[in-house]
Image (cartoon, rainbow, N blue to C red; front, side):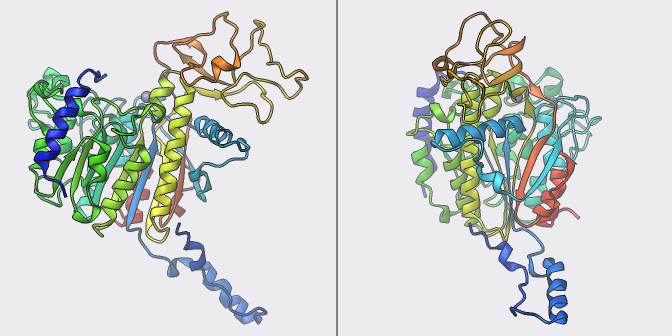
Length: 500
Ligand SMILES: [Zn+2]
């Protein structure tokens, strides 16, 4: 266990260095089914065995002890398909036949993602649906449609109950992990309420909001659950230091508060860290409640990460599961691969796919570290992107490459109507419209290449089609058919017994 004062000294030094940055398996479940003992059962025995097989619930635990919700932000189905091929090809294997870790899960549903007032959703509305069982309007976090300023001191509106509230009330531990800022819409929806997703920091709250006594999401994270060793989030790891410190300490808070100190003062079992080495120095058995902020804004993309400073999504997932499981209370953990979305907004398919690959690694690790007997693992996306895989490339063609057709005899790329080659991956809209430059395979497979778009737009947009939900463990049988995103709240709640 490390003392807070030492950790904070490290924190201040790292913040100074970072101030230039802008804020801008145990697979045992199948064996639990009753097995006929005799090689040649009599008819009666056979019927008995079938009766037992028809009632597997009697041999299964009724509830999950733990639930882990993985969210690939912006990980639409085309992203999963392309990442599967990217992952296979990057290992020198067949790409099309590859499977990402969560594609092995047996329970699957399609999920409708729209917001109350938007056909094409944003992350605030979608994360609200998963965390409260109720959709919101686009850009709003866990507030009812008519519940103006819910959660603010001077508002009479009642904010919806969060899944984390139910878990906390049931004595479970709770945690969030994200490669985005912990105040960004998806992680913030686990613990917070805000009329605008932009209220990550006090300086961004509208005048109306300030008059209503609304507090920013960083302050809400620290205040969540009140004081005491078992109150609030036990683990919160991600980016977003800027919203937790005043300007004197390299942050951007107008009120000058040091929220890392405030976190540490919640109890003597609360610690703050800002490097991977300090994170790894905390022994899970010590029961420390850990706030880890690794970067002023979002964490780096996995391909750009400074491994000596920032943990990977997989490393944060390992820490969170070790820490939460050691408490033996049962836990709710939300893990977000937050930057698939950001790479897509820039039409940078390489980083969107490598971030998805990292999410698949984190899911594989979580599956290894937990038992199918007591842990429900869900993997989904909040919404899709306008990302396509197209143009009849031959099997085995590099997924990031120029389209070479199965009929090509000289191996040369196919040509479009403008006599220029084109890539398999593309976007409906975004910053990089097609020009008359002849692109080469070297250019388009570079990690910094930005795929072409049909419609010019400063930032590529989300897509409106359904996303996938993969599930395994107790409660996974609820995941089938086409569901509304808000039903994920019920699926989790029924699995751990906090929702009827
Ligand atoms: Zn987005």
